Figure 1 (cartoon, rainbow, N blue to C red):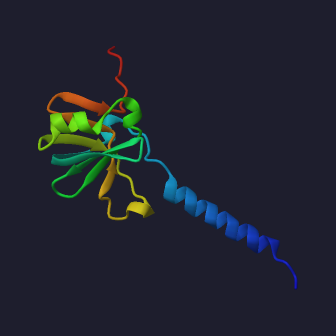
Figure 2 (figure 1 turned 90 degrees about the vertical axis):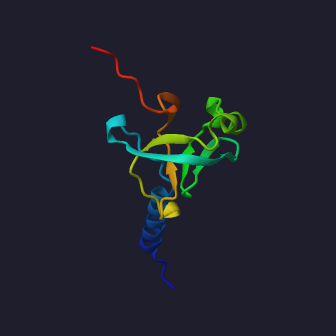
Length: 126
């Protein structure tokens, strides 16, 4: 039986490409490009040991990647912001793992004028 190395390489390449698409991180964006959503927080919890999630009453969840490593604690944030209206800024981003987009990457979380978390860099004043 003749081996087909080209077919094996093709299958391997397609598998790697699919994994890259599935597990790619959310793209970094400027604040001006961000989508904005406001909602009442129903639950704040940790995902694993590093990510932090804000679940809204409408069922959507905003995830702060590595939020726990940035000194954000679910217990203390729950005391302050549970049942409050928070504003989330996030990138337009699609992933096959989260087809219905119920979990979104939070680039910024704020309550009124108070910024709880942000990935946006402050621009120097001219």
